[in-house]
Image 1 (tube, rainbow, N blue to C red):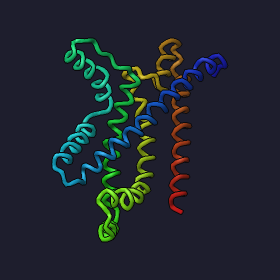
Image 2: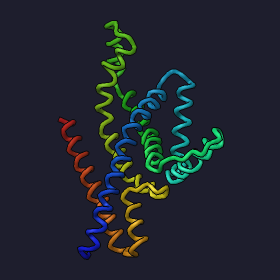
Image 3: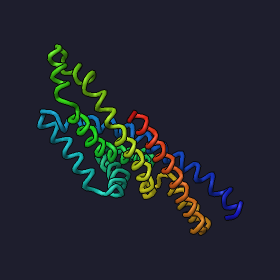
Length: 221
């Protein structure tokens, strides 16, 4: 690979990496909030809450992320434009964050539901015997051990979200893959460009997997 190629494509990769991490981090944080609400709703006594959460998860799991991206980026703005009478345009990066959030939330909801149900019922009963309210039992007794149990799954979902950002190139989110496509469209240097792209993902995801194992070992002590 020539120095000229590296001097051109590496800055593009760095810009793409910044967007990739931005979309993935914001998406996983918002997805955690959405997933926590949905996961709690799934094991609640309210049929309406369970129904809404179940339909949301069904839609997200039952449609490809590429289709979701196209729908959020093109269809949703079109619907808003028709409803308001004004032209509405959604920024591609914002659309990407929405898609990652929806996907992360759907899968995190299962993690949250499993973690909440995994807390020993005896601990809840002990809290009730001490006169604690339902809210106090939830925040003092249930959530701390449940959150600890969620961390491996949350970290794994973050890694998946980073990989999923590559699919957002279809709506022109300028992440790593899109930056590579832009470079190839101008130079036709297909082999070196996509090789560098693959290596950037490999290094990034390897670092995240190593960090995940480190966190899991720390938690196991």
